[in-house]
Length: 275
Image (tube, rainbow, N blue to C red; front, side, top):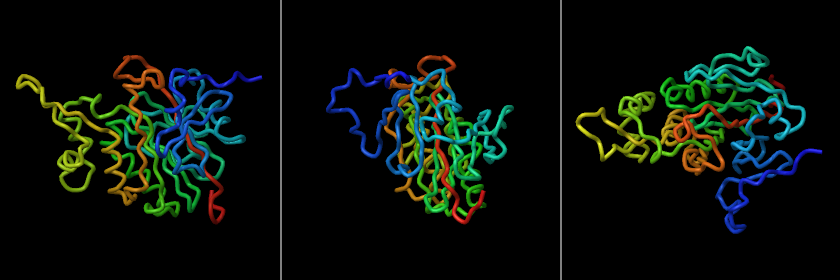
């Protein structure tokens, strides 16, 4: 028999468990996983550090039985591939993955970068992206949306979940990094980030050091998605910070250790029988 759920929330008062607006912790025999309420019609989950040692081949069974598993060799770039090109090792080098048929589970991993899950209720298509600063600068989100559009998706119908990631106050970067993340945005991207509160110049900056910013990587991702035609109201950002929530998530910035948590979503049967 499988072990009962682990309890990362054992020290949380009952009154605070599952009170996140728009997000729900779901318990199963393997542990707890986090789901976005807006994607409730799609089997999906953001897994925590308590699932360490278990990869997509095992985790897929906690989303839904009978799913095929598709994953990437993430390289912090802008390449996007289809699930039919990611069925077995060696996994393709890319940071975006889109479904081509129902019953496919798509996976990304990270330890501070943003896991991005995209779902189209109209066609059943889904996509995942690894949203680190380099892949955002390389345009992985726009590339994923464009590939979905080729398969009949309209950006305005998409629902997107931005999962647990490092928060802006905990993510200090050089100005050159925030400028590269801003570059794909329409207009003056860095000023747009600043106006939206997604980048904050470091007030402790010294003239002897390069300019520093605090970068909200998920806020930057949301603006890029909006530039691709996705409605702001359809972009749902998880409030958890991987750096701050040490009991729940691995964080490279905090621990300087190579350890990740996985996030996945499964596509539905395609409208019109595509696949």
